[in-house]
Length: 328
Ligand code: SAM
Image 1 (cartoon, rainbow, N blue to C red):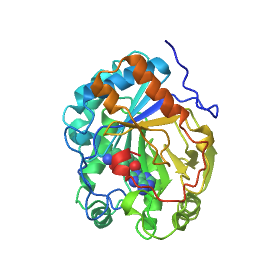
Image 2: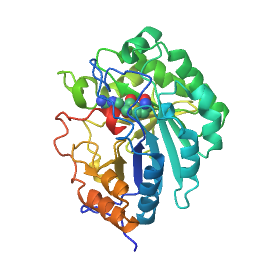
Image 3: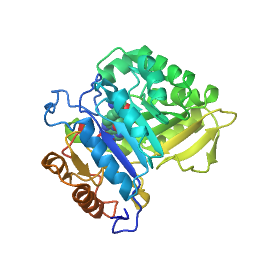
Image 4: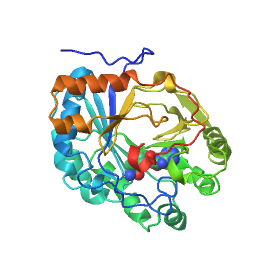
């Protein structure tokens, strides 16, 4: 049986983002509430075998691109072997990873050998005290060393994700953008989204992508527009004059890019999330544990694709789930 993963609004869904754990070795203020989170039990989390079954079925339906996220994916035991199996699935053309980078010096080489194509590293500041204030840890040096290591072992591209945090990392924008002068990095500035119990009352517009762009222009230099490539996702891309790398702007709150959404998400506890910005989720774990056939799994995946909303759907609200559960 073959399926076509086109949603009711004509968008072709070929990209699955998979959160493999809700555990993390950082406690970022915008991702985890200060009182902590109720972690999933071992039983609740999808086993690697179960995730691979979903991927196999999704691939037969048209999914070509996978991103592994979390929590922090590199803290889950067995992740290298899992990625090795994932990259071995015929028809999966691209497997990427989003990580906070704190374990990358140790793991970058094995990840590369396992066939990982691309890596995104989250880094919101270059200042040690601010890093500690955001993440609750003193691991900035580890993350910076991890970025270096990612280059050394040959990841290309290496992308840095910066969440724009009003009142916290405005002073970092110029320095983070400046990293692109020396290295062929993509540094992407992302508007903070209103997830879970971490949201504070100030409006997201208070540190918009546009504001970051203006700061870069006035504090660092002129930016040339760069055409968006197939690997750029929703980012609008720029380059500082003479820079080796690029700057990306993701206006996830003030912008409207749902019309080109090609994604679906699989959460660590085994639900399909048709839209990042809607709390609607569809259980697939029960089907996996009942031993449902690939065709039955395919029907669930199809129902999740059919549940994708048209877009621009009130995302100025606030969502029950934290990003630690969804994976970004
Ligand atoms: N632990 C990994 C990491 O730090 O990259 C992967 C999981 S993390 C949830 C994935 C991405 O989501 C990170 O780049 C993080 O900065 C981003 N993120 C988390 N909460 C966010 C929010 N409220 N708004 C925008 N991005 C957010």
